[in-house]
Length: 178
Image (cartoon, rainbow, N blue to C red):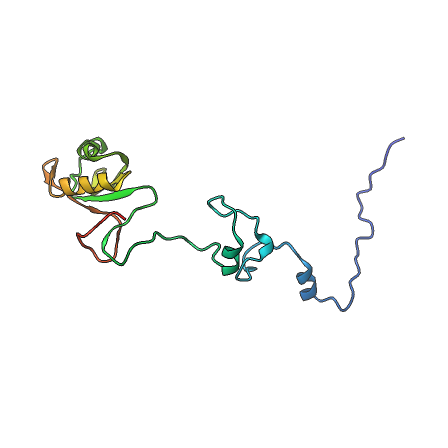
């Protein structure tokens, strides 16, 4: 005695009422995939979802429709000055000699504070560096100290120019830590 498995479909035809149209069928669908289904604001029944910072959403945020909007760094007024990147304060160093090494840049800037990242862009065609470097500091104070001390100094016999990589407002020398 063996069990038989029928692979042929049995009566898969389904009857629909004539009154049901495609629109009515789509309205009954509760789960939708893809883009284009956003109604503008979240509904209160979606309150228990997490946002990107893993905090619960409050009813006020959902009702105002502010969920999903990008946050920006608040500043006091429209003063010119440096702007913090995602991970730290980045200095743009120009006039860097084409044969300089990351270790040389690190030694030059390390005495002013904790460096989190150094990037020197390489020209693939020539194999030399392109003449600028990005130095990222952990704190504003250390980045400011390095900027003020090393702007106009020499590295490998060339004068380097140190400035902020990201600035808000018009360029200027009036910068304060907020």
